[in-house]
Amino acid sequence: EPEVTQTPSHQVTQMGQEVILRCVPISNHLYFYWYRQILGQKVEFLVSFYNNEISEKSEIFDDQFSVERPDGSNFTLKIRSTKLEDSAMYFCASTSTGGTPEQYFGPGTRLTVT
Amino acid sequence: RKEVEQDPGPFNVPEGATVAFNCTYSNSASQSFFWYRQDCRKEPKLLMSVYSSGNEDGRFTAQLNRASQYISLLIRDSKLSDSATYLCVVNAGANNLFFGTGTRLTVIP
Image 1 (cartoon, chains in turn green, purple):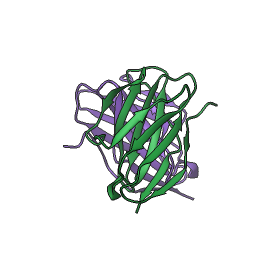
Image 2 (cartoon, chains in turn blue, cyan):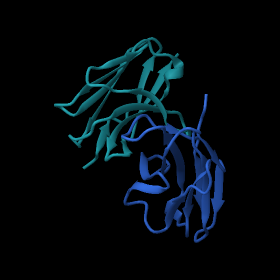
Image 3 (spheres, one colour):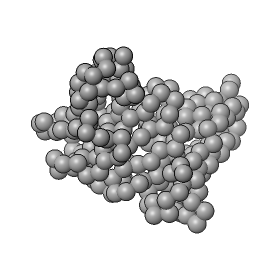
Image 4 (cartoon, one colour):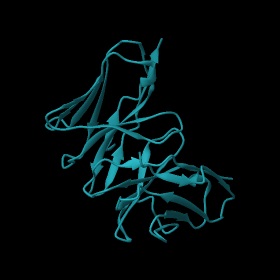
């Protein structure tokens, strides 16, 4: 069964550093998403991406965040200057079509900012 | 105002019991509804979509009441493997989802 993969599984970084979280969506999917989940809290939408551009973004997704699809398989989330409050699980998801069909999530990257 | 509200639980039930979870959502324009399950420190996994007519998948039954903006999930004959957090999820906008905080279920032997 095809699945979304994410690397690394755990990233530790110092405050102010840049991090790039990587995702490989399911191969025939066209819509990609990033969510985050702070420990003990709910999953929160960050951004959706289709046809090489952002479709929607939340208030959380400020100028410190950016997304990119650098090649035909990877989808990345960059945080330019990490803050302590960026510590969370970051989940990538993908779907084959738009209009909020079921989204399939990767295993997540746990980001710890110290 | 929370977009999706759920009773956080925990629900502790014996094996074989029937348990029901409820959820309310605030955006009357929402069109897509789902139940996801999340195990500790794992990703959310789709359990089932929720349709207006209600739908059933084995031991799981989901209901949607658009007038009351209310979604439910019923689990019959609970198994130990059903222990998880159940997330009520509603679309918000064209391409993103709002998640509830989840209801934690523990099935006890």
